[in-house]
Amino acid sequence: MCGIVGYIGNSQCFPILIKGLHRLEYRGYDSAGVAIIDAENQLKLCKSRGKVAELESFCQSKDVSGTIGIAHTRWATHGEPNDTNAHPHVSADGNIAIVHNGTIENYNVLKRALMKHGCEFKSETDTEVLVQLIQYIKQNNSCTLVEAVTESLGQVVGAYAIAVVDRNTPGTIIAARKSSPLVIGIGDDATYLASDATPIIDYTDKVVYLNDDEIAIIKKDEPLRVITTDNKPSNIDIQTLKLSVSQLEKGGYPHFMLKEIFEQPSTIEDSIRGRVVNNRIELSGVNLNRSKFVDAERIIIVACGTSWHAGLIGKRLMQDFARVPVSVEYASEFRYSNPVISSRDIVIAISQSGETADTLAAITLAKKMGAFVYGICNAVGSSIARATDSGTYIHVGPEIGVASTKAFTGQVTVLAMLALAIDPGTVEQLSKDIEALPSLIKETLKLNSTIENLSSTYTYVHNFLYLGRGYNYPSALEGALKLKEISYIHAEGYPAAEMKHGPIALIDHELPTVVIAPNDDLHDKIISNIQQVKARGGSVIAIVTKGDKAIKEIADHTLEIPKVAECLSPIIVSLPLQLLAYHIAIKKGCNVDMPRNLAKSVTVE
Ligand code: M6R
Image (cartoon, rainbow, N blue to C red; front, side):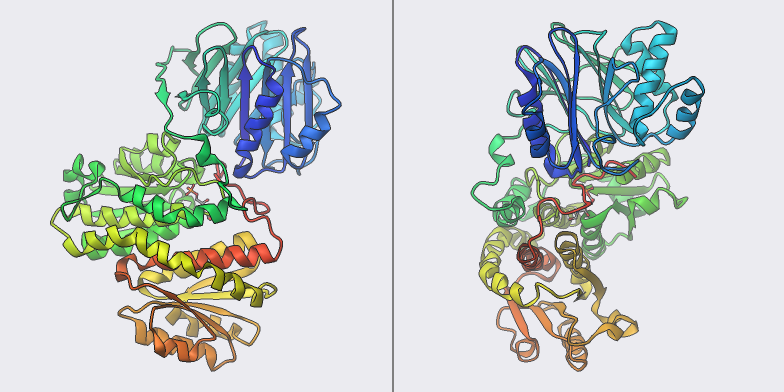
């Protein structure tokens, strides 16, 4: 979703802004732009529809000199992706430029009011309303830029991260946030600004995460100042990033997605490290809050997309091992469902990015209603990690590919450990099973070339069905989501036994079915489901445990995975599902790392 970069210092800012925008490309966007203030305090604006590379070539013939600038990648919300709607937006007098992430819900009311005062608008965006409002207030109240920004934000309903420059306020960037992330990088003689730390890591590891309702006043030759929207000074907490540039590169793989799939032996090792101790699971977040977990009447998991699928597996794990009732809610539904929550409830929020707007809103609601909120996040220092009462990081490193892969397996691994940690007994066999995961993953990834070959058979089908049971019903949902988001093939995931209640009508020789059928308690039942598909002329790709002769005889293709504990099998079966989606999408010529219309972190509702 939209990305912000800013720079103020002594170097030419254009290359720094462009490199930063490239770093944020993974978030998903459809246009990009920069605004630069030069040595004569002139405001230079360049923006265009399309990729950052197109903006770069568009700017080649332009004067982009200057040492203060803001830049943006836009993921369209208000108005189609075009040059006019791209950010930065500039006030009618041409003095003030703004970049904005988020949505201004009352933009129409504000726009109408400004139009009555003679304001004219060029774009369809909510963002232009904000910059016109800032200009209007600054002009009419004869106030400073920071006062005008503060006053304007007081009139705004919605979510925002903004950066503002003004040719009449030289040497200054004003930044502010509410529900949309902003990180400030403190360099030796420069200050950086970005939606996440990835554009900053090349220059400094010292960062300040702006909090909701805070405004940063970033000046060229003065220390950073942060105030609240009600004009009180804020504490500046400088943190040290634990992120390396190599983690943000492809490392020889053609795509981030493939790199991230193949990283899983080591990312799962990182998730487990220090947490399996003498046949027990030690999670500091649980140890420090044991009474909350012991007293919990129920657990409610809130999440979106792939993280929600991980939550479904988490439900089963916690019911099986911690024997506590668990429900799993889409965060976007939970927040509007008038939920019944008490202080004896634990709400677990799962999010890779830690910035998903719906999940963040669900957390705010749950906390307001007295629940103890536990986060399972990947992005260290993210909004969700900071908004929750406690939690466990999955520690799989930055996930750049839009399709979540290593974060999913990290989430399920952490959920398994969480389920076992809640009941503090020794779990000898299961802790060994968890420790064995990295080598099982490595073995499973050997299926890569088989799946690459198999994908040719299915490149041009229009629909896919995914079936699974028990622990692997959520795997079916996840397999289908992975395929549809990167290959644009319609795919549905179903609990295998539900097929006969409707989806069976779809089955014919044109509809392939992926059946997730490892050797578990429901193995015989799933064999019947495969037979039902075969009896209707459907083809079957089955994911089975090594040596499964029964399914090999009836399925069209089998992908053999190593034997694994049933409760951990979703981690292993997700690998062939990820690879199948990847290879089909590649054969179709799709951009797997940045699929159309999708954003990596969904920071709007
Ligand atoms: O960052 P989050 O885990 O909160 O993101 C939730 C979903 O937006 C995300 O999982 C999405 O469904 C992915 N594109 C799936 O691959």
